[in-house]
Length: 185
Ligand code: HEC
Ligand code: HEC
Image 1: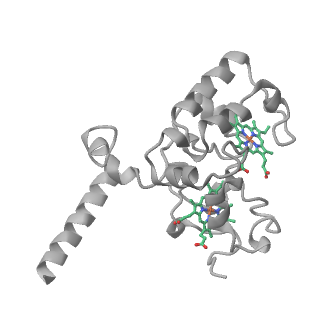
Image 2: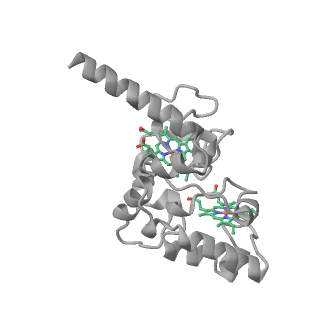
Image 3: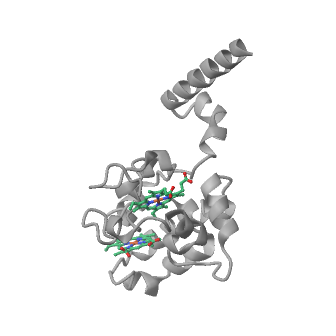
């Protein structure tokens, strides 16, 4: 039994280190199961540039298609949470396509599924932080660590605390709240 455990531990370690070196080839597709644990990453350059300048470029799998449709509406972009995030029409439709294709309702990734399963009254929320799953995941964090924390300002800035947010990883093991290294409360 002990040996078996040791072997599986070694195997698991071996596999996970291999997968972290994996590029786009065999290993990354072979280990796609592992990646299904979190949220699909986004690599589209236009999206990263246009939607990643004021805040981190949220993964499309954090909201359903209907939400992205509402957010990416021409008028809505002109008044985007108080900012103007207007886009050229061809860029707007291109980015909308990127978002819709990988939206939470079409994703097999764990976080996307949890977000979808949690939606109740509002099936097309305009904010990720208003989806019941994401809201609940943070409800114990005191305001002094979020909005009263000048280094964070709002829960919308996922990447301030989730150190691997750009890799689509939101595991609580990867959280460091700026100014509060140890976030136990
Ligand atoms: C000019 C700056 C700016 C640009 C460009 C911008 N945003 Fe935003 N976005 C904001 C602000 C400000 C907020 C609200 C942040 C807050 O409440 O603290 C926001 C919030 C959001 C939220 C809600 C996050 C949450 O759960 O609270 C989403 C989703 C979003 N933006 C998507 C996009 C997309 C998609 C694009 C590209 C088309 C984009 N943003 C481009 C400024 C911008
Ligand atoms: C102020 C820092 C902070 C910000 C900003 C933040 N989070 Fe978190 N997040 C945390 C902490 C701390 C936890 C763990 C909470 C707990 O276990 O009680 C957490 C938990 C989570 C979880 C559950 C993780 C798990 O292992 O079950 C998800 C998913 C998540 N956050 C996603 C997001 C997303 C998406 C955003 C941005 C829209 C965001 N978070 C913004 C600090 C933050």
